Image 1 (cartoon, rainbow, N blue to C red):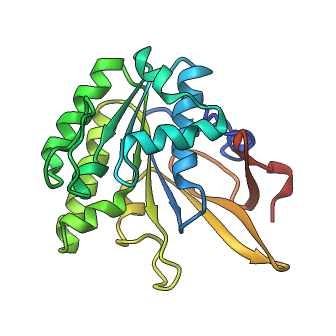
Image 2: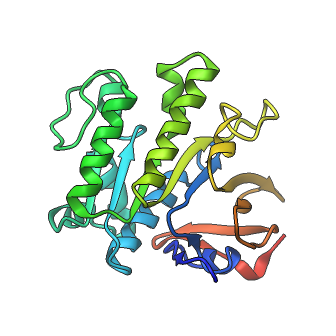
Image 3: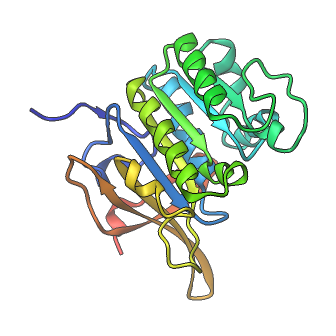
Length: 243
Protein backbone atom coordinates (compact mmCIF):
# COMPACT_ATOMS: atom_id res chain seq x y z
CA UNK A 1 0.00 0.00 0.00
CA UNK A 2 1.61 3.26 -1.14
CA UNK A 3 1.99 6.16 1.29
CA UNK A 4 -0.13 9.29 0.87
CA UNK A 5 1.89 12.04 -0.76
CA UNK A 6 1.83 15.79 -0.19
CA UNK A 7 2.87 18.00 -3.09
CA UNK A 8 5.67 20.40 -2.18
CA UNK A 9 4.19 23.11 -4.40
CA UNK A 10 7.70 23.67 -5.80
CA UNK A 11 7.87 23.00 -9.56
CA UNK A 12 10.17 20.11 -10.41
CA UNK A 13 10.70 18.90 -6.84
CA UNK A 14 7.85 16.40 -6.62
CA UNK A 15 9.23 14.30 -9.47
CA UNK A 16 12.61 14.06 -7.71
CA UNK A 17 10.82 12.90 -4.56
CA UNK A 18 8.74 10.43 -6.56
CA UNK A 19 5.48 12.21 -5.77
CA UNK A 20 6.24 14.69 -2.97
CA UNK A 21 6.63 14.44 0.80
CA UNK A 22 5.01 11.57 2.68
CA UNK A 23 2.03 12.91 4.60
CA UNK A 24 2.72 13.49 8.29
CA UNK A 25 6.51 13.46 8.03
CA UNK A 26 9.00 16.10 9.12
CA UNK A 27 11.53 17.31 6.53
CA UNK A 28 14.78 19.10 7.34
CA UNK A 29 15.91 21.69 4.78
CA UNK A 30 19.63 22.43 5.15
CA UNK A 31 21.62 25.19 3.49
CA UNK A 32 23.98 28.09 3.94
CA UNK A 33 23.22 31.80 3.69
CA UNK A 34 21.47 32.75 0.46
CA UNK A 35 20.53 29.23 -0.60
CA UNK A 36 16.77 29.92 -0.43
CA UNK A 37 15.62 28.22 2.79
CA UNK A 38 13.05 30.88 3.72
CA UNK A 39 11.74 31.03 0.16
CA UNK A 40 11.38 27.24 0.22
CA UNK A 41 9.27 27.41 3.40
CA UNK A 42 7.11 30.29 2.19
CA UNK A 43 6.47 28.68 -1.20
CA UNK A 44 5.61 25.35 0.43
CA UNK A 45 3.00 27.00 2.66
CA UNK A 46 1.63 29.51 0.14
CA UNK A 47 1.09 27.01 -2.67
CA UNK A 48 -0.21 24.48 -0.17
CA UNK A 49 -2.93 26.92 0.90
CA UNK A 50 -3.78 28.39 -2.51
CA UNK A 51 -3.44 25.35 -4.79
CA UNK A 52 -4.13 22.36 -2.54
CA UNK A 53 -6.41 23.97 0.08
CA UNK A 54 -4.08 22.89 2.88
CA UNK A 55 -3.77 25.66 5.53
CA UNK A 56 -0.39 26.21 7.12
CA UNK A 57 1.54 27.62 10.07
CA UNK A 58 4.83 29.50 9.69
CA UNK A 59 7.07 29.76 12.78
CA UNK A 60 9.60 32.47 11.98
CA UNK A 61 12.73 32.90 14.08
CA UNK A 62 14.76 34.77 11.46
CA UNK A 63 12.46 37.51 10.17
CA UNK A 64 9.65 39.43 11.79
CA UNK A 65 6.26 38.68 10.23
CA UNK A 66 5.94 42.09 8.59
CA UNK A 67 9.31 41.56 6.89
CA UNK A 68 8.26 38.07 5.81
CA UNK A 69 5.01 39.39 4.32
CA UNK A 70 6.87 42.15 2.48
CA UNK A 71 9.49 39.81 1.01
CA UNK A 72 6.79 37.35 -0.08
CA UNK A 73 5.19 40.06 -2.22
CA UNK A 74 8.14 40.02 -4.63
CA UNK A 75 6.85 36.58 -5.67
CA UNK A 76 3.23 37.81 -5.71
CA UNK A 77 2.48 35.77 -2.58
CA UNK A 78 -0.04 37.67 -0.47
CA UNK A 79 0.42 36.18 3.00
CA UNK A 80 -1.85 38.71 4.68
CA UNK A 81 -4.76 37.65 2.47
CA UNK A 82 -4.23 34.03 3.50
CA UNK A 83 -4.14 35.02 7.17
CA UNK A 84 -7.42 36.89 6.82
CA UNK A 85 -9.00 33.79 5.24
CA UNK A 86 -7.71 31.53 8.05
CA UNK A 87 -5.47 29.72 5.59
CA UNK A 88 -2.23 30.74 7.30
CA UNK A 89 -0.94 31.64 10.76
CA UNK A 90 2.47 33.25 11.29
CA UNK A 91 3.98 32.75 14.74
CA UNK A 92 6.41 35.54 15.59
CA UNK A 93 9.42 34.03 17.34
CA UNK A 94 11.83 36.59 15.86
CA UNK A 95 10.81 39.69 17.82
CA UNK A 96 11.53 38.22 21.23
CA UNK A 97 14.92 37.04 20.00
CA UNK A 98 15.71 40.67 19.15
CA UNK A 99 14.08 41.91 22.39
CA UNK A 100 11.43 43.79 20.40
CA UNK A 101 7.73 43.79 21.41
CA UNK A 102 5.39 41.97 19.05
CA UNK A 103 1.83 42.94 18.20
CA UNK A 104 1.15 39.68 16.36
CA UNK A 105 -1.75 37.49 17.47
CA UNK A 106 0.62 34.52 17.72
CA UNK A 107 4.02 35.26 19.22
CA UNK A 108 6.65 34.25 21.76
CA UNK A 109 6.71 37.23 24.12
CA UNK A 110 9.78 36.32 26.14
CA UNK A 111 13.02 34.38 25.80
CA UNK A 112 12.55 31.23 23.80
CA UNK A 113 10.59 28.74 25.85
CA UNK A 114 10.00 25.45 24.05
CA UNK A 115 6.86 24.71 26.05
CA UNK A 116 5.31 28.05 25.11
CA UNK A 117 6.38 27.55 21.49
CA UNK A 118 4.73 24.13 21.47
CA UNK A 119 1.53 25.65 22.88
CA UNK A 120 1.49 28.35 20.19
CA UNK A 121 2.04 25.80 17.43
CA UNK A 122 -0.74 23.63 18.82
CA UNK A 123 -3.10 26.63 19.13
CA UNK A 124 -2.33 27.85 15.61
CA UNK A 125 -2.73 24.47 13.93
CA UNK A 126 -6.09 23.96 15.62
CA UNK A 127 -7.20 27.49 14.68
CA UNK A 128 -6.86 26.94 10.92
CA UNK A 129 -6.88 23.13 10.81
CA UNK A 130 -3.32 23.30 9.47
CA UNK A 131 -1.99 20.53 7.27
CA UNK A 132 1.45 22.08 6.82
CA UNK A 133 3.95 23.70 9.18
CA UNK A 134 7.26 25.44 8.46
CA UNK A 135 9.86 26.37 11.08
CA UNK A 136 12.60 28.77 10.01
CA UNK A 137 15.09 28.20 11.56
CA UNK A 138 16.26 25.68 14.15
CA UNK A 139 19.53 27.60 14.42
CA UNK A 140 17.75 29.97 16.82
CA UNK A 141 17.55 27.20 19.40
CA UNK A 142 21.31 27.39 19.79
CA UNK A 143 20.94 30.93 21.17
CA UNK A 144 18.82 29.63 24.05
CA UNK A 145 20.70 26.40 24.76
CA UNK A 146 24.45 25.92 24.73
CA UNK A 147 24.48 22.31 25.84
CA UNK A 148 24.24 19.89 22.89
CA UNK A 149 22.02 17.52 24.88
CA UNK A 150 19.51 20.29 25.58
CA UNK A 151 19.54 21.32 21.93
CA UNK A 152 18.97 17.77 20.74
CA UNK A 153 16.16 17.25 23.28
CA UNK A 154 14.44 20.47 22.19
CA UNK A 155 14.62 19.61 18.50
CA UNK A 156 13.38 16.09 19.19
CA UNK A 157 10.41 17.40 21.19
CA UNK A 158 9.55 19.83 18.42
CA UNK A 159 9.74 17.13 15.75
CA UNK A 160 7.62 14.78 17.87
CA UNK A 161 4.96 17.46 18.38
CA UNK A 162 4.70 18.04 14.64
CA UNK A 163 4.23 14.33 13.98
CA UNK A 164 1.60 14.06 16.71
CA UNK A 165 -0.30 16.94 15.09
CA UNK A 166 -0.24 14.90 11.86
CA UNK A 167 1.05 17.84 9.84
CA UNK A 168 3.58 17.60 7.04
CA UNK A 169 6.33 19.93 8.13
CA UNK A 170 9.61 21.46 7.03
CA UNK A 171 12.28 22.78 9.39
CA UNK A 172 15.33 24.71 8.24
CA UNK A 173 18.83 24.76 9.67
CA UNK A 174 22.24 26.05 8.69
CA UNK A 175 24.70 23.80 6.92
CA UNK A 176 28.18 24.74 8.24
CA UNK A 177 30.46 23.95 5.30
CA UNK A 178 33.63 24.70 7.24
CA UNK A 179 33.01 22.27 10.13
CA UNK A 180 32.47 19.12 8.12
CA UNK A 181 29.11 18.55 9.86
CA UNK A 182 25.95 18.11 7.84
CA UNK A 183 23.88 20.39 10.08
CA UNK A 184 24.71 23.15 12.52
CA UNK A 185 24.23 21.09 15.68
CA UNK A 186 24.96 17.70 14.14
CA UNK A 187 21.68 16.21 15.37
CA UNK A 188 18.88 17.69 13.25
CA UNK A 189 19.17 15.18 10.42
CA UNK A 190 18.69 12.27 12.83
CA UNK A 191 15.28 13.38 14.14
CA UNK A 192 13.81 14.30 10.73
CA UNK A 193 12.24 11.78 8.37
CA UNK A 194 13.67 13.54 5.34
CA UNK A 195 16.62 15.79 4.50
CA UNK A 196 16.93 18.18 1.56
CA UNK A 197 20.22 20.01 1.13
CA UNK A 198 20.42 23.37 -0.68
CA UNK A 199 23.72 24.55 -2.16
CA UNK A 200 25.05 27.85 -3.50
CA UNK A 201 28.39 27.28 -5.22
CA UNK A 202 30.59 29.11 -7.65
CA UNK A 203 30.83 27.32 -10.99
CA UNK A 204 32.60 28.84 -14.00
CA UNK A 205 32.79 32.22 -12.27
CA UNK A 206 29.06 32.27 -11.44
CA UNK A 207 27.10 31.40 -8.31
CA UNK A 208 24.69 28.53 -8.99
CA UNK A 209 22.06 26.91 -6.83
CA UNK A 210 21.42 23.17 -6.56
CA UNK A 211 19.76 20.69 -4.22
CA UNK A 212 19.98 17.06 -3.16
CA UNK A 213 17.31 14.95 -1.46
CA UNK A 214 19.68 13.17 0.91
CA UNK A 215 17.04 11.22 2.84
CA UNK A 216 13.35 10.47 2.53
CA UNK A 217 12.50 7.73 4.97
CA UNK A 218 10.18 4.92 3.80
CA UNK A 219 10.28 6.17 0.24
CA UNK A 220 12.39 5.92 -2.88
CA UNK A 221 13.78 9.15 -4.32
CA UNK A 222 16.51 10.42 -6.61
CA UNK A 223 19.96 10.88 -5.04
CA UNK A 224 21.32 13.09 -7.82
CA UNK A 225 22.06 16.79 -7.40
CA UNK A 226 19.70 19.05 -9.36
CA UNK A 227 20.07 22.72 -10.28
CA UNK A 228 17.34 25.12 -9.27
CA UNK A 229 16.65 28.79 -9.81
CA UNK A 230 14.87 31.52 -7.90
CA UNK A 231 12.75 33.78 -10.10
CA UNK A 232 9.69 35.98 -9.66
CA UNK A 233 7.68 32.75 -9.30
CA UNK A 234 9.85 31.39 -6.49
CA UNK A 235 11.93 28.22 -6.66
CA UNK A 236 11.90 26.03 -9.75
CA UNK A 237 13.89 22.79 -9.83
CA UNK A 238 15.21 21.46 -13.13
CA UNK A 239 14.63 17.70 -12.73
CA UNK A 240 16.03 17.00 -16.19
CA UNK A 241 19.33 18.61 -15.25
CA UNK A 242 20.68 16.19 -12.65
CA UNK A 243 24.38 16.72 -11.95
